Length: 320
Image (cartoon, rainbow, N blue to C red):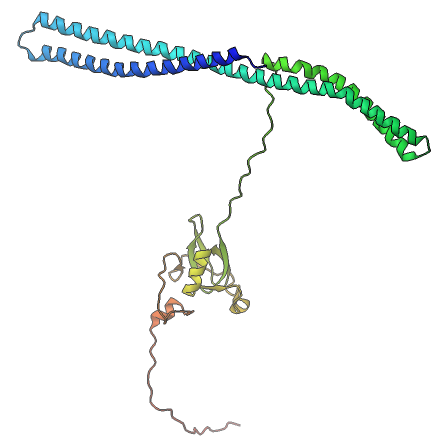
């Protein structure tokens, strides 16, 4: 049975904490005001000491009293804030204890009900087991072996359960009070661990390099792909490399004849090694689906017209 007085006590503590927090907020505003008053009073006293040709003792005394009053007020406000902060901390600790006690009481009461259910159902289960074994034994007398074995097993099991429950029930009946007084932890249902979705690796593609090139992987690290070698690179980079003619798909027929023909003889820092990420792509029909390298394009070969085709016979002396 729930204790209504405990709920009332918890509510009162919560209201007290709320009131204390509100009072601290108000005092903090007053503290800022008092600090400003003190700063102005100190500045006025300094001005009187520095500006006047002759010090007016009466005026100086008045200014000092203003400084003293402002400092005393500020000190009092700060002491009040410190005191309320301690009261608030004590109230919060008391609230935590009340909530823990309430949670323990609820858990103990729930366990009391569960233990009572076990204790009440055990005799009924034992009686039903005996009735069941009596029925089996009646059939076993007709020389039915399996029925006799089932009867013996149930009788043995019922005896073991009765002995075990007599031992366990004594412990279970004492457990609710142990939970109430803090000598046992609050029983909590085990929650399944949250399912963490596996990180999907970024897409990659394996291509066959027609010329050596550099590129960045998904982590931004510089990588090198040697000519006539298979290289794994980010999908977008691989697609760009194929558009540039730097690489081809691994299904390309040239791969079977050229793969590994360089024998690992590479210089990643060579001047003709292309940077795929920085390379500009050409557009237009004259560059579409073209596999020519940049070096061949820059050569700018021009076909020379050599006139009509000429035919003739050349005499050659045979050597014996």
